[in-house]
Amino acid sequence: MKKLLMTIAGAVLLLSSSAQDDQKDNSNTSNPETMKRVTFTSEGAQLVGNLYYPNDFDGSRKYPALVVSGSWTTVKEQMAGLYAEKLANEGFITLAFDFRNFGESEGEPRFYESPDLKKTDVKNAVSFLTSLPEVETAKIGAFGVCAGAMYTLMAASEDDRIQSVVTTASWLHDAEAVKLFYGGAEGVNEKVTAAQTAKKEYAENGTVAYIPSISTEDPTAAMYGPYDYYLNPERGAVKEWSADKFAVMSWEDWLTTDPMPTAANLTVPTLMIHSDGSVLPQYTKNYFEQIATEDKKLHWMETELESPYHQFNYYDQDTEVNESVAEASSWFKANM
Image (cartoon, rainbow, N blue to C red; front, top):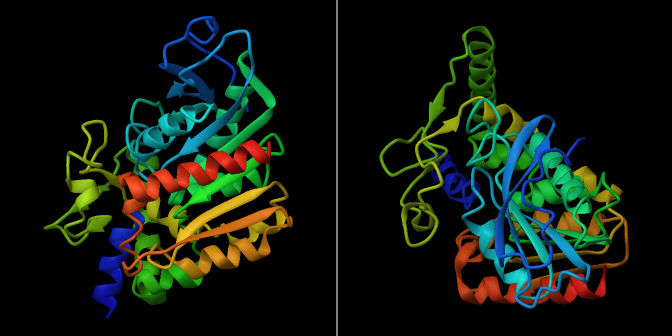
């Protein structure tokens, strides 16, 4: 049973301020490309993103804008970019970016996953959007997929510049949930201890301990199993993403993060899209119930897939993605 839970956990997890400096090519709003590469800073690290514009963009107007975040370890060319492009087609300026330590963005150690750092990066992405003359700064929202939903909710609970939130297939856990997925308290403690050892080694000699992000052969991988999204180059196995490096020191940050209490501080209109076949459906329901506003909606999709296997569909499959985009677009237009 423990082995089964750990295997499922691998599937789920990979199913997975000063932000106004060094803004390159952001002033030409009269005739931008539909998408362009931009840079901004987050706590001194230069982050790289793709900024998407509506097809009928008019440089004399201001537009509502969205920060779009994908699942853990991922890069902007995966689900974040897909949703950002589709939401731009709905009339928003959207930003998908590489979090620090990943993709084209700066940050050391590489492939170090920290929910707290990613929360801060989301807030600094908002700062970047507020600096753009084409953005209506009173209408900035945030959209997150899987673990990106966790980072988004954490950021929005602290940053009142985020006027509205939408999540889809949200990954939300607490200390009890990680015990279920990682072999109880003993399994969690082993990973936390390994992370602490890795952090010590990095501090002393700069060496970073890595395990694969995904593997069908190495059971120590962050995701162990034949999970098509991250193995298929036609889906999530894009050249910009690393399948072979996950910093071991990440485990402590990941396993000890509890986003659930942030719901009590979330006061902006919030839409959560989920299903019984996605990851930890009861946790999304629990979080939703605790959101500190009546201006909220839970959109539950039907599926015959068992939890957590429907999760992958929200990353790139037309049925789940298009319905999520339609719901999100309507929500943001009505609530920003």
